[in-house]
Image (cartoon, rainbow, N blue to C red; front, side, top):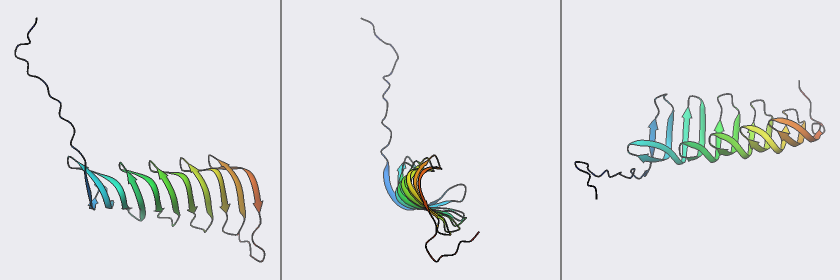
Length: 153
């Protein structure tokens, strides 16, 4: 039988449980967040529903572990808007992206790219419905602008 002399038992402590909160705070880069968060040992993590503003860009929607995940709307400084599903800060799932010129895409997204079934409508009315793969139109149907509308270059 051996005895350990002079050694204290090491007891590992469990990490602190996160505390839910709601409030407003500013990041070091001067971006701002207002909404739900988790606080673990003084470190805040966006989690729940909130609004994030960075310069002229704004995201309003759901957060999971500090990432845009769930349903939300991102307004870009260019005037473009994406409304739909996010996963880990990327467009993922169903959503609509409206370009600054009024063109829009509604359909499936994967890794921030048009991917799957969708409808692309140009500002002058050209409608493309079909299959997109990694942002590239692969197959489907294209139609001209609605009758009586003018086409601009």
